[in-house]
Length: 85
Image (cartoon, rainbow, N blue to C red; front, side, top):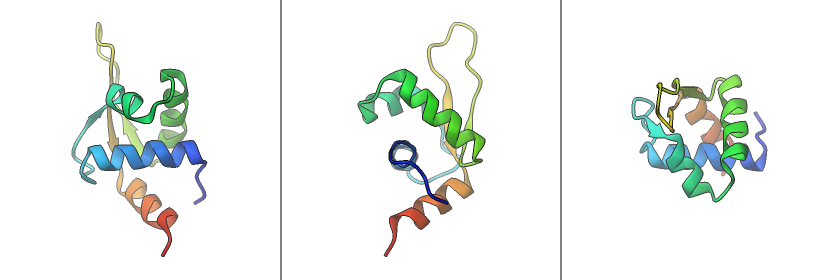
């Protein structure tokens, strides 16, 4: 699977922050901060990665200004495939 540069960047950040553990959630705000991109750009990439089945997006709780994000097994496989030899 070929990912855009932005999608790959977000997936790499998520993998790093979750210690490559699909069971470990990461705040989307931490991903935004680390990426240096706008919140809107990151949310677009998160939506795209979610639709590809590479991440899971939690709901935004009432009154919260963040949501939790998890990488999936398929997301980990995509990172491995896109890193090359």
